[in-house]
Structures are given as structure tokens and as C-alpha cells.
Length: 420
Image 1 (tube, one colour):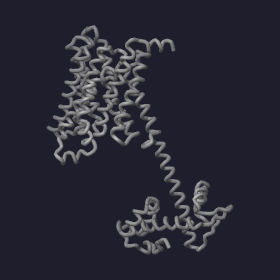
Image 2: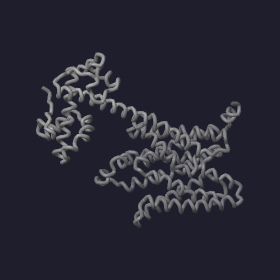
Image 3: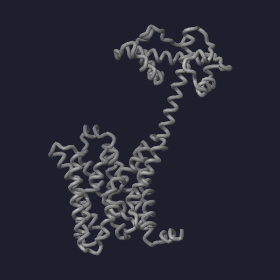
């Protein structure tokens, strides 16, 4: 604990922590629009494609100069995007294929220049590897100042084009049909992605920078449906992961920052996949369980109604019912006054009769619709109607009745029961 406290009192610690969280949040905001426009691969291509600019900037400056390296990274990032668009436009290759070609070529060139840097004998040559996997602890205040200035510019530009990005992210076709200059906005977004990638090269690393652009947006989408909520959540979760990764980077200097941040984001992704209120597996399980319970209840009351149709009796014994219901289903039917239960004897109430009539009517209407409208054979309509009967609401039932001209019988000549 004493050693941890010593790291927290390190004069560079709070600079690195504040700077890394800020840079990561800005990158995640830009990445949210990339994610919404399904351009996730573009971020990966740019992250790998700017490596020649990083290595070249190092060789030009002769040292680890953040400003020169940033300029080199941005220049090569723009060149990466331009090359991908040119190849896609001038050839029959798909955009994803063009990305793979440019990414491979530029990253290969970058690795060659990286080897030149490492064998150059320059005093800071050993620190060049921090740009591959990220090492927040190695950043100096002056480095953070350079990255932060670029980040502020990115934030201002993003705010300026926010309305336009919103339009093309959610209704691109309408924007194009109305004469909106979509290509210009796409170009601005590409430059923003390049800059957002470049500002995180030392804290996150080139190889894993694409994860910081896309993963926070993917996590935010599981928790929010509105764009502003996604942006806030995406920026917050990226800042949190970056802060945690920076702490680890200081307390364990041998471990690069980038992989830790990505692993933390991956952990947040798994947690969100399970518990998110909109798309979580837990919510989906509960919804499936709820739907299953509804189907079991409705099938049970429908069977009782069919028993009444055949016998005219409203009192039954449990052994007379096909597919004996579970205690859970029986308890629900009793609590909702569908039935009265005494031992193994069941009495169908008036409310239960209405519910059974409704489900039976929905089933037979669907059978007739499938037979007439979709030309399905009469002996094939039952399984589909068994599923669809549980989906019908009052409005849809009215539409079916109108479309079928208020029929009296189903394809099997059974009466379609209406309310008396």
C-alpha cells in the first residue's frame, strides 16, 4: 500500500491520469459516429496506417518529439484514408478489401521504418515501442500538452459538425436525396478519426487504438438508444477504462497501458452484455421467460375453453386436461380469476371463458388468414397459428376481421367464437 501511495504522489501521475482520460474520452466521442456509420474497420486501418508517420517523425526529429510525431501520424492517416477511397473508386475492389490492402502495405512500411529507428543509435530509440502498445507512464507533461491541444481542436470541430454527423448517421439516404453534401461530411469525419487516433498513440498504442474508438460506442449502444446518451456514456466509459489502465501503468511499469485499457473495456463489454437494461442477456432471458409463461397460460386457458366447446361443461378434473399445467400456471390462472381450483377440480370462470374465447378466436382467425391470403394448405396452418395467436392485439384483430370480412368459421369449419 505504501508503494501505491508513493506512485500516487509522483509528480507526473496526475498529469498522465488527467491527460489520458481526456484523450480517451475525445477519441471515444469520434468513434461513436464511426460505429453508428458502420465504419469500424476504418479506425483499425487508420491506426495501423499511421505507423510510418510515427516512425518517420521520430527519424526527422531525431528524438521523441510529440509535435513532429503527431504531424507525421496525421499526414499518414490522411494518406491512408485517401488511398483507401482512391482504390475503392478506381478499381472493382470493395472498401473492406481496399482497407486490408492499404493497412497491410502501410503497416509493413511502418515496421521497416521502426527497425531503422531501433538500429539508428538515437538516444530515445528504445522508447519508440511505447507507440505500438501504449505506455502512459512514459508521457511527459509537454507531450500531454501537445496531444491535449489536438484533442481540444478535435472536440471543437466535432461540436461544429455534430448536426451534420447526426443526419448522415441516422438517415443517410434522405440526406443524399435532399442534396446534402454527404461526401464532405464523410471527409471531415475521416479527418477527425485520424486525429482521434493520433492523440492516443502513446497512451493506448497504435495496434489497439481501434478498440478505444469502437468498443466504448458498442458498450454505450447497449445502454442507450439516444445519441446524446450514447456520446456521454461512450466518453465516460472510455475515460474510466483509460484511468484504470493509467494507474496500472504507473504501479506496474513493465506492463504496457494499451492492452490493460482494452482488457478493461472488454470486461465492461461482457458486463454490459449480461446486465444492460436494453439488450442484456439477462433482460432477454427474462423476456423469453415472460413470453414462455404467457404462452403456457394462454394455451392452458385455451384447452379449458376447448373442453367446454366439446362438453358444454365448465367443471373439469386435472386428469381430463391434455398437458397438465404447472403449479405456476395454475396459480396465475387462480390469481387472475380465470379458474376456481379445489383440489384436482377446476371450474372455468366467466373471465376465464372470455380469455379462452379470445385466444381461440385469434388462433382460428390466423388459420383462416394463412389459408386464404397465403394459400397455405388447411392441414399446414395449425402450427403457424399456434405461434401467431399469442402475438395478436386488439388493433391487429380488427384488421384481420376486416380483411377476412368477419368470417364465421375457420378452414376446418369450426366456429370462430365472438363475444356474445
